Length: 196
Image 1 (cartoon, rainbow, N blue to C red):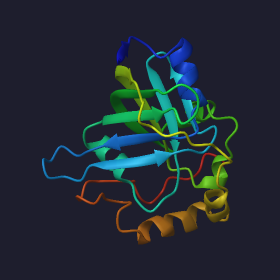
Image 2 (image 1 turned 90 degrees about the vertical axis):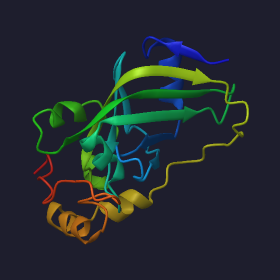
Image 3 (image 1 turned 30 degrees about the vertical axis):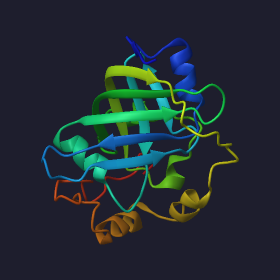
Image 4 (image 1 turned 120 degrees about the vertical axis):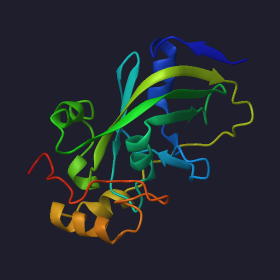
Protein backbone atom coordinates (compact mmCIF):
# COMPACT_ATOMS: atom_id res chain seq x y z
CA UNK A 1 0.00 0.00 0.00
CA UNK A 2 2.76 2.48 0.87
CA UNK A 3 5.20 3.90 -1.64
CA UNK A 4 8.56 5.63 -1.26
CA UNK A 5 9.29 8.64 -3.46
CA UNK A 6 12.64 9.98 -4.62
CA UNK A 7 11.44 13.58 -4.79
CA UNK A 8 8.54 15.92 -4.15
CA UNK A 9 7.05 16.57 -7.57
CA UNK A 10 4.09 15.87 -9.81
CA UNK A 11 0.96 14.46 -8.13
CA UNK A 12 2.74 14.17 -4.77
CA UNK A 13 3.61 17.87 -4.74
CA UNK A 14 0.10 18.80 -5.88
CA UNK A 15 -1.42 16.71 -3.07
CA UNK A 16 0.79 18.35 -0.43
CA UNK A 17 0.11 21.85 -1.68
CA UNK A 18 -3.68 21.30 -1.79
CA UNK A 19 -4.01 20.26 1.86
CA UNK A 20 -5.35 22.83 4.31
CA UNK A 21 -3.57 21.45 7.36
CA UNK A 22 -0.39 19.51 8.08
CA UNK A 23 1.34 18.26 11.21
CA UNK A 24 4.92 18.48 12.45
CA UNK A 25 6.49 15.97 14.83
CA UNK A 26 9.80 16.42 16.64
CA UNK A 27 11.53 15.04 19.73
CA UNK A 28 14.63 15.73 21.79
CA UNK A 29 17.50 13.26 21.88
CA UNK A 30 16.83 12.42 25.52
CA UNK A 31 15.06 9.07 25.90
CA UNK A 32 12.65 10.58 28.42
CA UNK A 33 12.23 13.89 26.60
CA UNK A 34 8.85 15.22 25.49
CA UNK A 35 7.72 14.34 21.96
CA UNK A 36 5.96 17.25 20.25
CA UNK A 37 3.23 17.19 17.60
CA UNK A 38 1.90 20.45 16.16
CA UNK A 39 -0.83 21.29 13.63
CA UNK A 40 -0.13 23.96 11.00
CA UNK A 41 -2.70 25.41 8.71
CA UNK A 42 -2.70 29.07 7.67
CA UNK A 43 -3.23 29.22 3.89
CA UNK A 44 -0.06 30.17 2.06
CA UNK A 45 2.27 29.44 4.99
CA UNK A 46 3.78 26.28 3.45
CA UNK A 47 5.95 26.09 0.32
CA UNK A 48 7.83 23.48 -1.68
CA UNK A 49 11.21 25.09 -2.38
CA UNK A 50 12.57 22.32 -4.59
CA UNK A 51 12.18 18.57 -5.10
CA UNK A 52 13.82 17.81 -1.74
CA UNK A 53 13.20 20.93 0.34
CA UNK A 54 10.07 22.42 1.90
CA UNK A 55 9.52 25.31 4.28
CA UNK A 56 6.82 26.77 6.47
CA UNK A 57 6.31 29.93 8.49
CA UNK A 58 6.63 29.64 12.26
CA UNK A 59 4.33 32.15 13.92
CA UNK A 60 3.95 33.56 17.42
CA UNK A 61 2.62 31.16 20.01
CA UNK A 62 2.95 30.14 23.62
CA UNK A 63 5.49 27.36 23.01
CA UNK A 64 8.58 26.75 20.88
CA UNK A 65 9.04 22.98 21.14
CA UNK A 66 9.62 22.43 17.42
CA UNK A 67 12.27 25.15 17.30
CA UNK A 68 14.00 23.76 20.40
CA UNK A 69 14.11 20.22 19.03
CA UNK A 70 15.35 21.36 15.64
CA UNK A 71 18.09 23.43 17.25
CA UNK A 72 19.18 20.39 19.25
CA UNK A 73 19.05 17.62 16.62
CA UNK A 74 17.23 18.70 13.45
CA UNK A 75 14.93 15.65 13.22
CA UNK A 76 11.41 16.33 11.98
CA UNK A 77 8.51 14.59 10.27
CA UNK A 78 5.81 16.44 8.38
CA UNK A 79 2.48 14.73 7.68
CA UNK A 80 -0.49 15.52 5.44
CA UNK A 81 -3.81 13.62 5.42
CA UNK A 82 -6.48 13.63 2.75
CA UNK A 83 -9.69 14.74 4.45
CA UNK A 84 -11.43 15.01 1.06
CA UNK A 85 -11.08 12.98 -2.12
CA UNK A 86 -9.21 9.68 -2.32
CA UNK A 87 -7.60 8.52 0.96
CA UNK A 88 -3.92 9.27 1.34
CA UNK A 89 -1.32 10.11 3.99
CA UNK A 90 2.06 11.59 3.04
CA UNK A 91 5.02 11.86 5.39
CA UNK A 92 8.25 13.72 4.78
CA UNK A 93 10.97 12.63 7.20
CA UNK A 94 13.99 14.86 7.24
CA UNK A 95 16.23 17.42 8.86
CA UNK A 96 14.89 20.83 9.68
CA UNK A 97 16.34 24.17 10.65
CA UNK A 98 14.67 27.30 12.00
CA UNK A 99 15.89 30.33 10.05
CA UNK A 100 15.43 33.32 12.32
CA UNK A 101 14.59 36.89 11.41
CA UNK A 102 18.21 38.11 11.62
CA UNK A 103 19.54 35.36 9.31
CA UNK A 104 20.73 36.65 5.89
CA UNK A 105 18.61 33.93 4.22
CA UNK A 106 15.39 35.09 5.88
CA UNK A 107 14.29 37.71 3.33
CA UNK A 108 14.88 35.36 0.40
CA UNK A 109 12.84 32.63 2.07
CA UNK A 110 9.95 35.01 2.70
CA UNK A 111 9.61 35.47 -1.07
CA UNK A 112 8.14 31.93 -1.19
CA UNK A 113 5.12 33.07 0.87
CA UNK A 114 3.68 36.03 -1.07
CA UNK A 115 0.09 35.56 0.09
CA UNK A 116 0.77 35.80 3.84
CA UNK A 117 0.92 39.07 5.75
CA UNK A 118 3.76 38.02 8.02
CA UNK A 119 3.49 41.19 10.10
CA UNK A 120 -0.02 40.18 11.14
CA UNK A 121 1.09 36.91 12.70
CA UNK A 122 4.22 37.68 14.73
CA UNK A 123 6.52 35.70 12.47
CA UNK A 124 9.35 34.10 14.48
CA UNK A 125 11.16 31.98 11.91
CA UNK A 126 10.98 30.12 8.63
CA UNK A 127 11.43 26.40 9.20
CA UNK A 128 13.29 24.77 6.30
CA UNK A 129 13.14 20.97 5.98
CA UNK A 130 15.37 18.86 3.76
CA UNK A 131 13.62 15.56 2.96
CA UNK A 132 15.49 12.32 3.66
CA UNK A 133 12.56 9.91 3.26
CA UNK A 134 9.27 10.61 1.46
CA UNK A 135 6.46 8.06 1.80
CA UNK A 136 2.74 7.73 1.45
CA UNK A 137 0.31 5.28 3.05
CA UNK A 138 -3.33 4.45 2.46
CA UNK A 139 -5.17 6.70 4.91
CA UNK A 140 -8.24 4.45 4.78
CA UNK A 141 -9.23 5.25 8.36
CA UNK A 142 -8.89 9.04 8.06
CA UNK A 143 -12.41 10.55 8.15
CA UNK A 144 -13.90 12.92 5.61
CA UNK A 145 -13.88 16.50 6.86
CA UNK A 146 -14.74 19.68 5.00
CA UNK A 147 -12.68 22.86 5.02
CA UNK A 148 -14.72 26.01 5.66
CA UNK A 149 -12.19 28.80 6.13
CA UNK A 150 -8.98 29.79 7.90
CA UNK A 151 -9.52 31.10 11.41
CA UNK A 152 -8.82 34.81 11.77
CA UNK A 153 -8.08 34.68 15.50
CA UNK A 154 -4.30 34.40 15.19
CA UNK A 155 -3.92 37.47 12.98
CA UNK A 156 -6.45 39.30 15.12
CA UNK A 157 -4.41 38.56 18.23
CA UNK A 158 -0.88 39.24 16.94
CA UNK A 159 -1.40 41.98 14.32
CA UNK A 160 -1.46 44.58 17.07
CA UNK A 161 1.97 43.56 18.41
CA UNK A 162 5.20 45.43 17.76
CA UNK A 163 8.59 43.72 17.95
CA UNK A 164 8.97 45.12 21.47
CA UNK A 165 5.60 43.93 22.76
CA UNK A 166 5.98 40.58 20.99
CA UNK A 167 9.31 40.10 22.72
CA UNK A 168 7.66 40.89 26.08
CA UNK A 169 4.92 38.36 25.30
CA UNK A 170 7.50 35.65 24.53
CA UNK A 171 9.53 36.41 27.66
CA UNK A 172 6.45 35.88 29.82
CA UNK A 173 5.75 32.45 28.35
CA UNK A 174 7.33 29.54 30.18
CA UNK A 175 8.23 27.46 27.12
CA UNK A 176 9.33 29.88 24.41
CA UNK A 177 12.95 30.70 25.32
CA UNK A 178 13.36 27.10 26.43
CA UNK A 179 11.46 23.89 25.78
CA UNK A 180 9.47 21.80 28.25
CA UNK A 181 12.66 19.76 28.73
CA UNK A 182 14.89 22.83 29.14
CA UNK A 183 16.41 22.96 25.64
CA UNK A 184 17.15 26.37 24.08
CA UNK A 185 14.08 27.55 22.17
CA UNK A 186 13.43 30.88 20.52
CA UNK A 187 16.40 33.25 20.84
CA UNK A 188 15.37 36.29 22.85
CA UNK A 189 15.35 39.22 22.59
CA UNK A 190 13.53 38.71 19.31
CA UNK A 191 15.47 40.05 16.32
CA UNK A 192 13.78 42.99 14.56
CA UNK A 193 11.18 42.18 11.92
CA UNK A 194 12.39 42.32 8.31
CA UNK A 195 10.10 45.30 7.71
CA UNK A 196 11.79 47.19 10.55
